[in-house]
Amino acid sequence: METVVTPDEWMTRGETRVRGDRKSLIVWSGIPGEPAKVKIYGRGQHQDRARFLAPAGKPDPKRRKPPCDKYDRCGGCPIMHLKPKAQSDVRLEIVRGLFAGRGLADFAPT
Image (cartoon, rainbow, N blue to C red; front, side, top):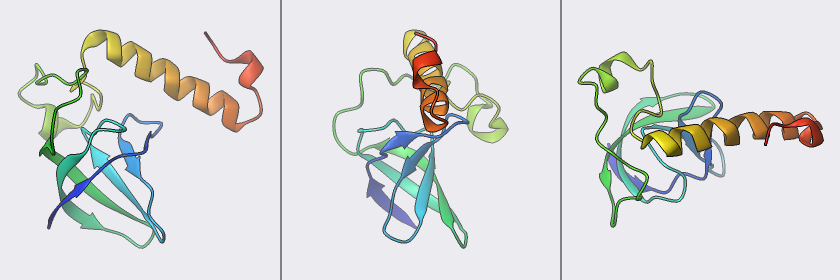
């Protein structure tokens, strides 16, 4: 099933999440704040899974075409769809979020 969603946040592995009333939608190759056409391929009890198909409007300036032709099939580099500087920023944001979630925001890397 295809639909349009706007991811809310990064997940710890590099995927994005769309928070729903009852369950979340995990989006492969999404970018928080970027409306996207996605294809839902998995339905679970607590979360569904989807793959990015195309931007639903203007693409985020951090987005690029992944340089690896195995990107979607492999799944080993979940933020490869971002430009290199954006990848570094996302990794840092994910780590800061993990620290903050455990009450250690003061000790997070800067």
